[in-house]
Length: 353
Ligand SMILES: NC(=O)CC[C@H](N)C(=O)O
Image (cartoon, rainbow, N blue to C red):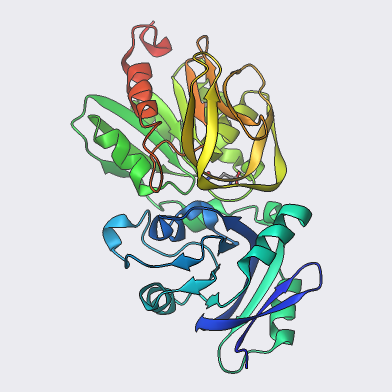
Protein backbone atom coordinates (compact mmCIF):
# COMPACT_ATOMS: atom_id res chain seq x y z
CA UNK A 1 0.00 0.00 0.00
CA UNK A 2 1.24 3.48 -0.85
CA UNK A 3 2.13 5.94 1.85
CA UNK A 4 2.87 8.92 -0.42
CA UNK A 5 1.00 10.77 -3.16
CA UNK A 6 2.01 13.30 -5.80
CA UNK A 7 -0.84 15.46 -7.13
CA UNK A 8 -0.26 17.15 -10.48
CA UNK A 9 -2.08 20.23 -11.78
CA UNK A 10 -3.46 18.20 -14.68
CA UNK A 11 -5.58 16.20 -12.22
CA UNK A 12 -3.46 13.09 -11.91
CA UNK A 13 -2.40 11.70 -8.53
CA UNK A 14 0.63 9.40 -8.59
CA UNK A 15 1.32 6.86 -5.87
CA UNK A 16 4.78 6.77 -4.31
CA UNK A 17 6.77 5.59 -1.30
CA UNK A 18 7.44 8.05 1.54
CA UNK A 19 11.20 8.41 2.24
CA UNK A 20 10.93 11.58 4.33
CA UNK A 21 7.48 12.53 5.64
CA UNK A 22 5.54 15.76 5.24
CA UNK A 23 3.16 17.73 3.09
CA UNK A 24 4.19 20.45 0.69
CA UNK A 25 3.59 22.13 -2.64
CA UNK A 26 5.69 23.74 -5.36
CA UNK A 27 6.39 24.07 -9.06
CA UNK A 28 7.20 20.62 -10.44
CA UNK A 29 10.46 20.54 -12.43
CA UNK A 30 13.00 17.89 -13.39
CA UNK A 31 16.76 17.68 -13.72
CA UNK A 32 18.52 15.21 -15.97
CA UNK A 33 21.76 15.48 -13.96
CA UNK A 34 23.18 12.07 -13.12
CA UNK A 35 25.56 13.34 -10.45
CA UNK A 36 25.56 16.30 -8.12
CA UNK A 37 22.43 15.63 -6.12
CA UNK A 38 23.92 17.29 -3.02
CA UNK A 39 24.74 20.43 -5.00
CA UNK A 40 21.32 20.50 -6.66
CA UNK A 41 19.42 19.93 -3.43
CA UNK A 42 21.26 22.86 -1.79
CA UNK A 43 21.05 25.21 -4.79
CA UNK A 44 18.92 28.22 -3.70
CA UNK A 45 17.62 28.60 -7.26
CA UNK A 46 15.34 25.60 -6.52
CA UNK A 47 13.38 27.47 -3.81
CA UNK A 48 9.60 26.91 -4.13
CA UNK A 49 10.09 24.02 -6.56
CA UNK A 50 9.65 20.25 -6.30
CA UNK A 51 12.70 18.64 -7.85
CA UNK A 52 12.33 15.37 -9.76
CA UNK A 53 15.52 13.52 -10.66
CA UNK A 54 15.24 11.70 -13.98
CA UNK A 55 18.38 9.68 -13.20
CA UNK A 56 17.02 6.55 -11.49
CA UNK A 57 19.33 6.20 -8.47
CA UNK A 58 20.04 9.22 -6.29
CA UNK A 59 22.40 9.07 -3.32
CA UNK A 60 24.82 6.35 -4.42
CA UNK A 61 27.94 8.17 -3.17
CA UNK A 62 26.60 9.42 0.16
CA UNK A 63 26.01 12.90 1.52
CA UNK A 64 28.90 15.22 2.38
CA UNK A 65 28.44 18.79 3.49
CA UNK A 66 31.62 19.87 1.63
CA UNK A 67 29.57 19.56 -1.51
CA UNK A 68 26.68 21.72 -0.32
CA UNK A 69 26.01 24.98 -2.17
CA UNK A 70 24.15 26.58 0.77
CA UNK A 71 23.32 25.79 4.40
CA UNK A 72 19.99 24.10 3.79
CA UNK A 73 17.96 21.96 1.40
CA UNK A 74 16.30 24.35 -1.02
CA UNK A 75 13.60 22.60 -3.08
CA UNK A 76 10.38 21.97 -1.19
CA UNK A 77 10.53 18.25 -1.91
CA UNK A 78 12.54 15.63 -3.80
CA UNK A 79 11.17 12.94 -6.12
CA UNK A 80 13.19 10.06 -7.57
CA UNK A 81 12.89 6.50 -8.82
CA UNK A 82 15.09 5.34 -5.93
CA UNK A 83 16.62 7.39 -3.10
CA UNK A 84 19.32 5.84 -0.94
CA UNK A 85 18.96 5.88 2.84
CA UNK A 86 21.74 8.49 3.08
CA UNK A 87 19.77 11.01 1.06
CA UNK A 88 16.40 10.10 2.54
CA UNK A 89 17.78 10.46 6.10
CA UNK A 90 19.34 13.82 5.27
CA UNK A 91 16.11 15.16 3.78
CA UNK A 92 14.16 13.79 6.74
CA UNK A 93 16.48 15.57 9.20
CA UNK A 94 16.01 18.78 7.21
CA UNK A 95 12.22 18.36 7.28
CA UNK A 96 11.99 18.19 3.48
CA UNK A 97 9.52 15.60 2.15
CA UNK A 98 11.02 12.99 -0.16
CA UNK A 99 9.32 10.26 -2.16
CA UNK A 100 10.52 7.48 -4.45
CA UNK A 101 9.29 4.32 -6.20
CA UNK A 102 7.68 6.59 -8.78
CA UNK A 103 7.80 6.24 -12.56
CA UNK A 104 9.83 9.42 -13.02
CA UNK A 105 9.69 8.93 -16.81
CA UNK A 106 5.99 9.72 -16.59
CA UNK A 107 6.70 12.89 -14.63
CA UNK A 108 9.40 14.00 -17.07
CA UNK A 109 7.28 13.42 -20.17
CA UNK A 110 4.32 15.15 -18.52
CA UNK A 111 6.39 18.23 -17.63
CA UNK A 112 7.97 18.26 -21.10
CA UNK A 113 4.56 18.15 -22.76
CA UNK A 114 2.50 20.31 -20.38
CA UNK A 115 5.21 22.52 -18.84
CA UNK A 116 6.39 23.07 -15.28
CA UNK A 117 3.23 22.81 -13.19
CA UNK A 118 1.75 23.11 -9.71
CA UNK A 119 2.31 20.00 -7.62
CA UNK A 120 1.35 18.81 -4.15
CA UNK A 121 2.96 16.05 -2.11
CA UNK A 122 1.74 14.19 0.94
CA UNK A 123 4.09 11.58 2.41
CA UNK A 124 3.96 9.49 5.58
CA UNK A 125 1.76 6.92 7.31
CA UNK A 126 -1.34 9.13 7.41
CA UNK A 127 -0.98 10.67 3.95
CA UNK A 128 -3.98 10.53 1.60
CA UNK A 129 -4.43 11.44 -2.07
CA UNK A 130 -6.77 14.24 -0.96
CA UNK A 131 -3.95 15.77 1.14
CA UNK A 132 -1.74 15.91 -1.92
CA UNK A 133 -4.49 17.49 -4.01
CA UNK A 134 -5.16 20.07 -1.29
CA UNK A 135 -1.45 20.99 -1.30
CA UNK A 136 -1.40 21.24 -5.10
CA UNK A 137 -4.43 23.52 -5.08
CA UNK A 138 -2.72 25.95 -2.68
CA UNK A 139 0.39 26.22 -4.88
CA UNK A 140 0.84 29.70 -6.33
CA UNK A 141 2.53 30.48 -9.67
CA UNK A 142 6.25 31.09 -9.41
CA UNK A 143 5.92 34.72 -10.52
CA UNK A 144 3.61 35.40 -7.55
CA UNK A 145 6.49 34.78 -5.12
CA UNK A 146 7.31 38.46 -5.30
CA UNK A 147 9.71 38.54 -2.35
CA UNK A 148 11.42 35.20 -2.95
CA UNK A 149 14.80 36.92 -2.67
CA UNK A 150 14.22 37.38 1.07
CA UNK A 151 14.04 33.59 1.49
CA UNK A 152 17.49 32.94 0.04
CA UNK A 153 19.66 36.03 0.43
CA UNK A 154 22.06 36.98 3.24
CA UNK A 155 20.43 39.27 5.80
CA UNK A 156 23.59 41.33 6.32
CA UNK A 157 26.59 42.08 4.11
CA UNK A 158 29.41 39.54 4.46
CA UNK A 159 32.92 39.56 3.02
CA UNK A 160 34.73 36.52 1.61
CA UNK A 161 38.41 37.37 1.33
CA UNK A 162 40.44 36.03 -1.54
CA UNK A 163 43.53 38.22 -1.48
CA UNK A 164 42.15 41.63 -2.28
CA UNK A 165 43.38 41.87 -5.89
CA UNK A 166 39.86 42.79 -6.99
CA UNK A 167 36.75 43.86 -5.07
CA UNK A 168 33.54 42.23 -6.26
CA UNK A 169 30.18 43.55 -5.05
CA UNK A 170 27.82 40.59 -5.34
CA UNK A 171 24.07 41.06 -5.14
CA UNK A 172 23.07 37.83 -3.41
CA UNK A 173 19.79 36.80 -5.00
CA UNK A 174 20.36 33.24 -3.74
CA UNK A 175 24.03 32.73 -4.61
CA UNK A 176 25.54 29.28 -4.81
CA UNK A 177 28.60 28.98 -2.55
CA UNK A 178 30.84 27.90 -5.38
CA UNK A 179 30.16 31.06 -7.37
CA UNK A 180 31.61 33.01 -4.46
CA UNK A 181 34.56 30.62 -4.05
CA UNK A 182 35.28 30.63 -7.81
CA UNK A 183 35.96 34.36 -7.43
CA UNK A 184 37.91 34.22 -4.14
CA UNK A 185 40.10 31.45 -5.62
CA UNK A 186 41.07 33.96 -8.30
CA UNK A 187 42.22 36.57 -5.79
CA UNK A 188 39.00 38.56 -5.40
CA UNK A 189 37.46 39.82 -2.20
CA UNK A 190 33.75 39.17 -2.59
CA UNK A 191 31.43 41.56 -0.76
CA UNK A 192 28.15 39.66 -0.60
CA UNK A 193 25.25 42.09 -0.29
CA UNK A 194 21.55 41.42 0.36
CA UNK A 195 19.33 41.02 -2.73
CA UNK A 196 17.67 44.36 -1.90
CA UNK A 197 20.89 46.32 -1.36
CA UNK A 198 20.78 49.98 -2.35
CA UNK A 199 23.16 51.79 -4.71
CA UNK A 200 24.70 53.35 -1.59
CA UNK A 201 25.38 49.89 -0.13
CA UNK A 202 27.16 48.94 -3.34
CA UNK A 203 29.14 52.19 -3.49
CA UNK A 204 30.27 51.71 0.11
CA UNK A 205 32.36 48.65 -0.83
CA UNK A 206 34.04 50.54 -3.69
CA UNK A 207 33.86 47.58 -6.07
CA UNK A 208 35.75 46.95 -9.31
CA UNK A 209 32.82 44.94 -10.68
CA UNK A 210 29.14 44.50 -9.81
CA UNK A 211 28.13 40.83 -9.93
CA UNK A 212 24.51 39.63 -9.85
CA UNK A 213 24.16 36.05 -8.62
CA UNK A 214 21.90 33.19 -9.58
CA UNK A 215 18.60 32.92 -7.73
CA UNK A 216 15.10 31.43 -7.66
CA UNK A 217 11.86 32.53 -9.25
CA UNK A 218 10.95 35.23 -11.72
CA UNK A 219 13.77 37.72 -12.44
CA UNK A 220 11.18 40.48 -12.86
CA UNK A 221 10.56 40.23 -9.10
CA UNK A 222 14.15 41.31 -8.33
CA UNK A 223 13.30 44.98 -8.68
CA UNK A 224 15.90 46.35 -6.25
CA UNK A 225 18.69 44.45 -8.03
CA UNK A 226 17.51 45.81 -11.38
CA UNK A 227 17.55 49.33 -9.94
CA UNK A 228 21.13 48.87 -8.70
CA UNK A 229 22.23 47.60 -12.11
CA UNK A 230 20.51 50.53 -13.78
CA UNK A 231 22.32 52.91 -11.44
CA UNK A 232 25.81 51.52 -12.12
CA UNK A 233 25.50 50.57 -15.81
CA UNK A 234 28.21 52.42 -17.70
CA UNK A 235 30.10 53.23 -14.50
CA UNK A 236 31.08 49.78 -13.26
CA UNK A 237 31.67 46.54 -15.17
CA UNK A 238 28.70 44.18 -14.76
CA UNK A 239 28.74 40.39 -14.57
CA UNK A 240 26.10 37.82 -13.79
CA UNK A 241 25.17 34.17 -13.79
CA UNK A 242 21.72 32.76 -14.56
CA UNK A 243 19.21 35.00 -12.73
CA UNK A 244 22.08 37.52 -12.82
CA UNK A 245 22.06 37.51 -16.63
CA UNK A 246 18.28 37.93 -16.61
CA UNK A 247 18.29 40.80 -14.07
CA UNK A 248 21.09 42.66 -15.86
CA UNK A 249 19.37 42.32 -19.23
CA UNK A 250 16.01 43.53 -17.90
CA UNK A 251 17.66 46.46 -16.13
CA UNK A 252 19.35 47.52 -19.37
CA UNK A 253 16.09 47.56 -21.30
CA UNK A 254 15.74 43.94 -22.45
CA UNK A 255 13.25 41.39 -21.18
CA UNK A 256 12.76 37.80 -20.05
CA UNK A 257 10.08 35.17 -20.52
CA UNK A 258 9.15 31.89 -18.88
CA UNK A 259 10.16 28.75 -20.73
CA UNK A 260 7.76 25.79 -20.96
CA UNK A 261 9.84 23.51 -18.72
CA UNK A 262 13.29 25.06 -18.58
CA UNK A 263 16.79 23.60 -18.67
CA UNK A 264 18.04 21.55 -15.73
CA UNK A 265 20.94 19.18 -16.11
CA UNK A 266 24.69 18.90 -16.55
CA UNK A 267 25.04 18.27 -20.28
CA UNK A 268 23.44 21.24 -22.02
CA UNK A 269 25.45 22.06 -25.18
CA UNK A 270 26.34 25.72 -25.62
CA UNK A 271 27.92 27.21 -28.73
CA UNK A 272 30.15 30.25 -28.64
CA UNK A 273 29.27 32.25 -31.75
CA UNK A 274 32.71 33.88 -31.90
CA UNK A 275 34.71 30.65 -31.92
CA UNK A 276 32.07 28.14 -33.13
CA UNK A 277 33.20 25.96 -30.23
CA UNK A 278 30.61 23.93 -28.29
CA UNK A 279 31.02 23.25 -24.57
CA UNK A 280 28.95 21.20 -22.14
CA UNK A 281 27.33 23.20 -19.38
CA UNK A 282 25.36 22.84 -16.18
CA UNK A 283 21.98 24.54 -16.17
CA UNK A 284 19.08 25.24 -13.84
CA UNK A 285 16.65 27.80 -15.14
CA UNK A 286 12.99 28.20 -16.05
CA UNK A 287 13.16 31.73 -17.49
CA UNK A 288 15.22 33.01 -20.39
CA UNK A 289 16.22 36.30 -21.99
CA UNK A 290 14.01 36.99 -25.01
CA UNK A 291 14.97 40.60 -25.77
CA UNK A 292 18.66 41.28 -25.16
CA UNK A 293 18.35 45.08 -25.14
CA UNK A 294 21.76 46.64 -25.82
CA UNK A 295 23.67 43.40 -25.19
CA UNK A 296 25.23 41.20 -27.87
CA UNK A 297 24.46 37.48 -27.95
CA UNK A 298 27.78 35.63 -27.80
CA UNK A 299 26.60 32.13 -26.88
CA UNK A 300 23.48 30.09 -27.65
CA UNK A 301 22.01 26.76 -26.60
CA UNK A 302 22.52 24.23 -29.38
CA UNK A 303 19.23 22.45 -28.58
CA UNK A 304 16.84 25.40 -28.78
CA UNK A 305 18.89 28.49 -29.68
CA UNK A 306 18.07 30.28 -26.41
CA UNK A 307 20.48 32.95 -25.19
CA UNK A 308 23.34 31.55 -23.10
CA UNK A 309 25.88 34.35 -23.07
CA UNK A 310 25.70 38.12 -23.43
CA UNK A 311 28.45 40.69 -23.67
CA UNK A 312 28.81 44.39 -24.23
CA UNK A 313 32.21 45.96 -24.88
CA UNK A 314 30.69 49.38 -24.60
CA UNK A 315 29.07 48.80 -21.21
CA UNK A 316 31.64 46.25 -19.95
CA UNK A 317 29.09 43.48 -19.39
CA UNK A 318 29.62 39.74 -19.38
CA UNK A 319 26.87 37.32 -18.36
CA UNK A 320 26.05 33.64 -18.64
CA UNK A 321 22.70 31.83 -18.43
CA UNK A 322 24.36 28.55 -17.48
CA UNK A 323 26.49 27.72 -14.43
CA UNK A 324 30.21 28.05 -15.19
CA UNK A 325 31.06 27.30 -11.53
CA UNK A 326 30.31 23.67 -12.45
CA UNK A 327 29.04 22.37 -9.13
CA UNK A 328 27.85 19.94 -10.25
CA UNK A 329 28.94 19.49 -13.83
CA UNK A 330 31.65 19.73 -16.44
CA UNK A 331 34.48 22.23 -16.03
CA UNK A 332 34.46 23.43 -19.66
CA UNK A 333 33.38 26.96 -18.82
CA UNK A 334 35.33 27.79 -15.64
CA UNK A 335 37.25 30.37 -17.69
CA UNK A 336 34.26 32.69 -17.30
CA UNK A 337 35.56 33.66 -13.86
CA UNK A 338 38.95 34.61 -15.33
CA UNK A 339 37.08 36.80 -17.81
CA UNK A 340 35.22 38.48 -14.93
CA UNK A 341 38.50 39.21 -13.14
CA UNK A 342 39.98 40.54 -16.40
CA UNK A 343 36.93 42.74 -16.91
CA UNK A 344 37.29 44.12 -13.39
CA UNK A 345 40.99 44.89 -13.81
CA UNK A 346 41.29 45.73 -17.48
CA UNK A 347 42.36 49.13 -18.72
CA UNK A 348 39.21 49.48 -20.72
CA UNK A 349 37.28 49.31 -17.44
CA UNK A 350 34.86 52.19 -17.49
CA UNK A 351 35.44 53.21 -13.87
CA UNK A 352 39.17 53.64 -14.59
CA UNK A 353 38.55 56.03 -17.46
N1 LIG B 1 19.72 29.28 -11.46
C1 LIG B 1 19.11 30.45 -11.59
O1 LIG B 1 19.66 31.51 -11.28
C2 LIG B 1 17.70 30.44 -12.07
C3 LIG B 1 17.22 31.75 -12.55
C4 LIG B 1 15.71 31.89 -12.61
N2 LIG B 1 15.13 31.70 -11.32
C5 LIG B 1 15.14 30.90 -13.60
O2 LIG B 1 14.55 29.91 -13.20
O3 LIG B 1 15.28 31.09 -14.78
